[in-house]
Length: 245
Image (cartoon, rainbow, N blue to C red; front, top):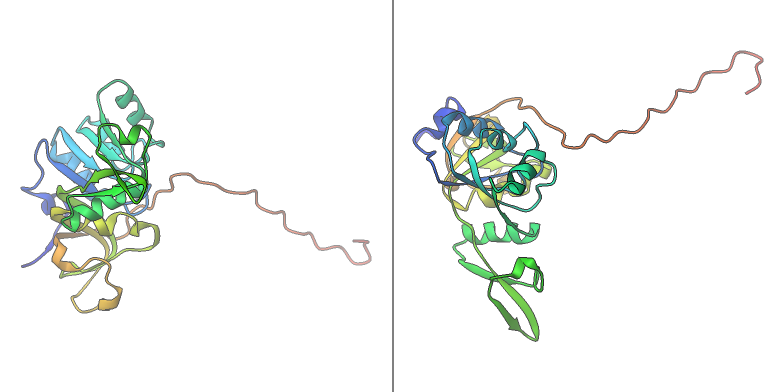
């Protein structure tokens, strides 16, 4: 089966529907499947639930879908960089299921591994545990968290081959690999598309069995969420001959 599609809209054709649950990979603005997010925006699908570590920033990533009011609910960990997200949440337009970051990662991993629930100490005695089962193991209390599984996952990879085997790069490896396993259908956008057999099996992060559709997105824009710089040091001026230094 040919997994490679000509563009992001074609790769999502027939998949995106109102009310569905979608996992979107990436960490901050690193490794976000931006082309696929734009295609979801263009589809016009509404009442969507997104599982993502964060919700992009204003005007970038999932922030684009917040602008068009296509997201009904976010299952997230860190959302502090998006003012529109805050406005919609505080006004009651947007539902939020908040998770400690490690718990969110494990809920996704569990969903991909077929594990319906697990226990963790994180959140015991806090708002996170309200309404959830709490059990004691070896004298310690643990809160039960359920695994997460989506209708589709959209991920971004640095390299992929035509069989769907994927390699992520650095920070983009956060959340993308586990999300690729935790849905009925995974669609990947890749920066570098190579023929099958060119990726060393020991270097593959996501096996192609998990990826059903792909789109080649060369030279994507690499956004910087928080640009931090220091003042450039002034270059030393050579002293003139005979001048004291």
